[in-house]
Amino acid sequence: MFLKCRGLGYRYPRSSEFVFQDISFALDTPGFHALFGPSGVGKTSFAKLLTGDITGYTGEIHKKKDTVFLYTYNQERLPGWSSIGRHLEKVTPPGMNDLCRELVDTFAMEPFMNQKFSQLSLGQQNRINLIRYLLQEFDLLVMDESLANVDERSKENIIFKIKELFPQKYFLYISHNLMEVSKFSDAILVLLKAGKHPQTSLIKGLNIHRNDVINSHELDGVLLGIMNAC
Ligand SMILES: Nc1ncnc2c1ncn2[C@@H]1O[C@H](COP(=O)(O)OP(=O)(O)OP(=O)(O)O)[C@@H](O)[C@H]1O
Image (cartoon, rainbow, N blue to C red; front, top):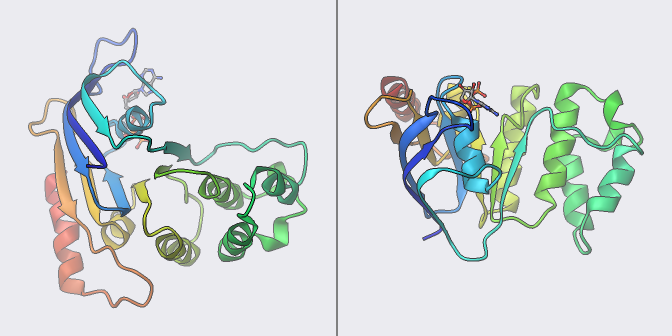
């Protein structure tokens, strides 16, 4: 068992409303998975409970022993004291320089290595931020809208590369893009508004890899499954 949660409920301190009251979910297969649901339904809050960034929940979370769960989101800032190339040099663990170069290349960030974070576009900022997380030690990485502002083609290339480079790791991708969630993800946990029973629905995505041909009939089935669940 890698991750199992049962009957999870959470209410922010000083709030009278539960964000969610009964989420159960299990992950036992590495790969690219997704959290989907309407804005404000609690995806970020749920993800932060899993990574331990917020506490004080009801219910149970069981994680495989000694696993590292990290949370990253778009609009996360990097320090402005040096170029992003210098920053990556500093945060790249020993022995990971080749991986760093490959990520910089795939994420098409090489031309910007001498620039400071504040001089980058939003999509470039999100890409470099994701690279610095992928260089860290983790078993599960939450990517909360981490590829926002990145064009579709680059995004696809990045997701395929992540699947190729990290086949044994778990990714939980939060996105409002129905099509990309359906195409790229294996398990898709759809969160429904508080008060709905059950409060989640689990849909199987296409989980495509580079060069896979998409079966449009299957894709329609996934899209419909998610829309009906919502
Ligand atoms: N720090 C906080 N204190 C109080 N309430 C909060 C806090 N952070 C979020 N909330 C509330 O919790 C609910 C869920 O927020 P959350 O960010 O988890 O939703 P989300 O599904 O990730 O939304 P989005 O898709 O818009 O990013 C919202 O109603 C939000 O107002």
